[in-house]
Length: 205
Image (cartoon, rainbow, N blue to C red):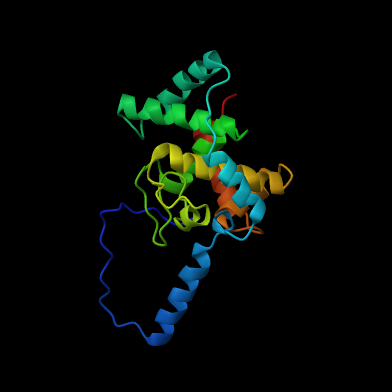
């Protein structure tokens, strides 16, 4: 996961000359790091699942349960999104997209917390966009070049579909599925960070 930076930020200007070798190594690192497991276009199963998800309509199955959840989560999220209208709409969207993908909505909140800090317009140094930090090449891969990854519903649908795919691929193992989403399979730093945020902020007892 790369630290999200606001879209309007300008790159820092270096004060030292960088040697050709160092610059080459840096570019190589960024190019490799940008191809996280969640962003690889090579898996035809994932591509098909995304196509299906982007062409589907989703809605609540149990509005009462959603309202109870919404009241609880709204109080927790207020410190990050003080605007009531923005906060409640985001929670409705997260609940809908997570439920449609058969994901725990609190897990999705935890991933968003880690990925973007609830900044809708977060942009990583390698171009990942929005709440769930989706790489833009996915739009062309799916033949949906006009999709706006900063749009809440679009971003969440891509992200939830990808996350669920990798959890399924790991037979329900959340740690390994989260590591795949982050492109760090075999390491535990990213999953542990998501679990920490889940336990501290979003878990429902």
